[in-house]
Image 1: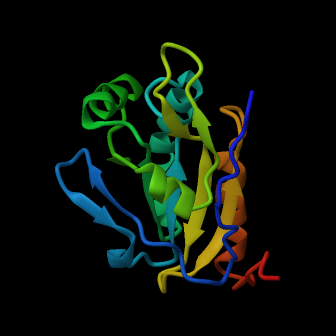
Image 2: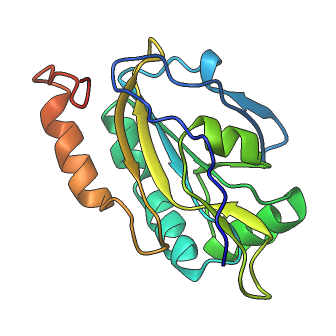
Length: 178
């Protein structure tokens, strides 16, 4: 097996988030630059329709939307899936309130420093991103990043909610800035 070196940035917290624009299943377009949350924008990148762990995680995320919203956190889940794959995924996960973005390009995956995988099984797309979670402040600066390399490498949503409940009122500083 040969590997090819790929240039993918290491994002630094406290610096501006890369641009991000995706289409959404509600028929619109979502642009990170236009988001003005009370406290944070939570961006959850997921592998796609082919991933059963993504189904569970995105369904859990949808059930916690009100808890994130109560903390002033706006949420979107994004994959590289096409519209034709994103629609049945939304139906299968029975998401009601979660905004779902689709069509993330490999270029955008790399710009965000996501781990990108090549499909090895018939059910997988030829290329897709591994899971990642980012928090972006209202001014567009990155606050938190957690990047996974496998389907089971995900942020615990309850722990994230507890962390947010602490950091928001305590004006917790940026980490990972050096």
